[in-house]
Length: 442
Ligand code: ATP
Ligand code: MG
Image (cartoon, rainbow, N blue to C red; front, side):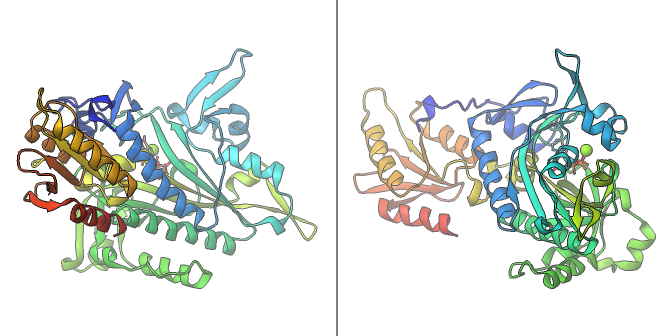
């Protein structure tokens, strides 16, 4: 990809309307463009990063046996009337009428729609458990959309649903998602803390919010910091090991302001283990039993008896995660963004010094590009006439970890190579490829 042909509109300065790091960087580097309050277009750079996050989210859902499907964004109001939530949901729901004057809405979440699908498709307890998910746009008419993609009105969410026969089976499903969330956030290089949460308008009795620590987060966080070093890498998704895993996490105090109680905090956590900070909610899981299956009459046959499905729902804010990764990893003083390797938009930038009369560096860049491409190293060539300094500054900000500089000092066999603001080294191309590939494997 040539930079001059890319749709990456970089701004010279930080936009004044942005208050937090992620919003600033996303506008500055042209990842997103606001189309109206709380509604954004995702331009190629931002979209590329979000797709990589989505891929990780998807792989971790698949790995616990959840089946992917896709439900529409527009739903009929009828199913929401059946569940009783049509009125309860309030002004956050965008209500629409079609040309036949039928009441429709843009889905803020999908419990009703998935229950309706379940009801017409699954008849016997033998087909349980059912774990399903989709990754789809949601709309919530938030009272105060702000902070760019962190709290917007239209956002991209992975939402999953589980259907089981008994509370015990349903808890097993819940715990599978619990583990898949820990793994997902870990792969994104984030330490997400599962916190006991209120269940809110979705209802129910068992719920965790997954919160990452960030100064700019909207939630206040009170936790025992030992929870941050718990290990879960080798946990097998079996009933006993999963319930032990959750117990292990649940024994540590970890709540947001909604559930905070000073006395309890003082009693349960020694001063030296106390961590009181702010965080960003990146995921939320709920168990709510037969709340929707009963009101919508979604049951299975269990030895001749009617049994309402026990349900849970599990959300991850895929678009919010782009912002959360920036909040966690962007050094806004040095203007350097460090993405986890799994989501970097390009692994390498080739930065030739371009002279109007002398195109030899650009030709060299094109040759190197072909070689990197043969190693599947996703690369961008900056063929603009900006100075080397301003080019490297730009790629530091976008977060391209490896930069090959073709300037006065590079020869046929040796090139200048730099990782972010580290010292520039003169190396052979083979060595540079080794370094980049090693990074890709780790
Ligand atoms: P919040 O408390 O932040 O409003 P929520 O409890 O309403 O979140 P859920 O209904 O559980 O959120 O949605 C699942 C996930 O979707 C959240 O954990 C969050 O990451 C993301 N999300 C929710 N609302 C928004 C929004 N307005 N903009 C971007 N992402 C959102
Ligand atoms: Mg909300």
